Image (cartoon, rainbow, N blue to C red; front, side):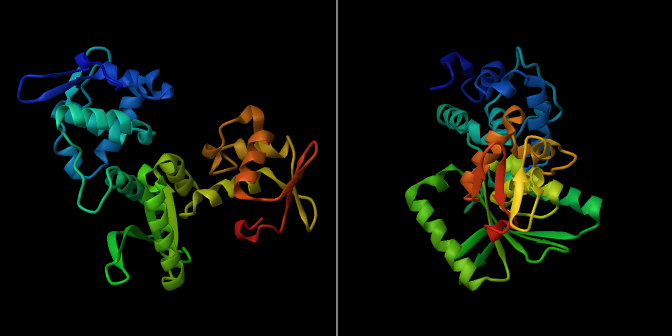
Length: 304
């Protein structure tokens, strides 16, 4: 239990939650900047599906609040937590408020809790790409395949992209063994029978960084390919067989002006250590001395 009993009150008809108590349980980078957190969550909420907004109070939508003293409706609290940056870290709070109040976030049949909000963020990101590049796009939600056996979250077409994309949004339950097996079965079927589509899975925990990379690169890719892009920017081609990462060359990967995926990199003071860990995770072969050497032609799936 995260919230004290005094955090939630009721008049017998409605429930309210003490906002400062919610903020104190947020990840540290948000709890220490409550005003910034609220503005970011509210901006996302205003771009969310109408089912979420229509149940919020006008006071919340107008941005009237005081993070030191305010009580807000239980639904307002749920809407903010679901719309928050790093929302994947708020599920315990959401579950506790729902259990104690009986108030629930709206979830459309066949969808997961955070899917609709991700869809709204995806649509807004594609709109910005379209506005800056002139490329047209479309999004189809909940499309069926294989005689309605499989229903996918989003099918995205983007002008100039080689293929349409199936975007599957994976919340935490996708890590469970039974669900992993189902996902693998679906993935195998799509790769075998829907070769004109590119399948991409986006984990909830990667949502914010993945959307930033999408907007910067201008094309949906797997999170692994966005990480590989960081390795490409951090390295220099020294010969036909090698790329070399040095302390100096690695700086480019951490520069937003040079790397549209720099948001994925978190340790500017330990660049070589972080980049080597990424290569190990992506199974990119390299040898290390005082520099990191990446084999240029392997693995080919990352285009290095």
